[in-house]
Image 1: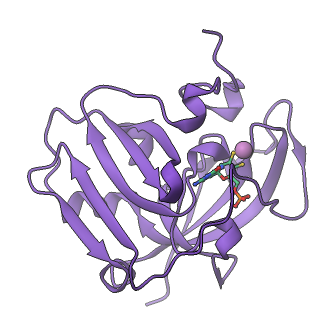
Image 2: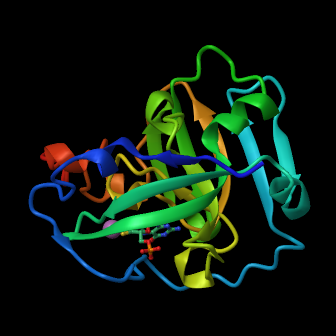
Image 3: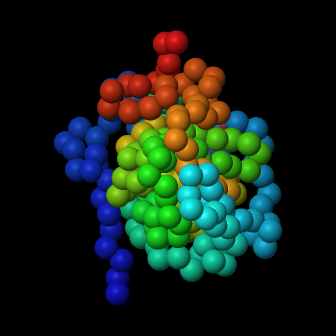
Length: 199
Ligand SMILES: Nc1nc2c(c(=O)[nH]1)N[C@H]1C(S)=C(S)[C@@H](COP(=O)(O)O)O[C@H]1N2
Ligand SMILES: [Mo]
């Protein structure tokens, strides 16, 4: 069966560019630090924290999970937006079938190689257009863009879309991730210009 494409709701707007953003034609490469060289025979995806039993998937197991396609725009807090991206990967909702999430879990921390983290509420994490992408515009995600697996959360600024993901931790209390600790907004909705924290 041909995969239905999930359209991120903001792509249906008449004005697709949030306030203070300008459109770029090519997806830039942007991150803190270097590009990690990931050997997929050693890479794992761990789901832990407030779950009944933690799960660790290897690359083969991860790649055999059901995949979806998502069409979305991307908005970086530094001011660029790249419209019309087609992502393919594992919907965050698949996580619910892999572990029993305890009812106390209200937040997630997404972890990446090298210690990058980003925090989300459970409801933002499980939005239907959020996925762990393995392909961008039909091609395997390149090392610079997060190979083998990157999160994509279309409704929030792109720093929430962690590259080189190694796992998800379920938490009862919110905790700030890498950029959120360094002055970025805790939530990051581009339509409300939630760019920086004021405290
Ligand atoms: N692991 C990791 N993921 C990250 C970052 C990072 O520094 N480390 N930077 C974020 C930021 S600020 C942006 S804009 C996007 C850029 O993704 P791209 O290089 O694929 O365009 O990655 C996000 N994910
Ligand atoms: Mo960014």
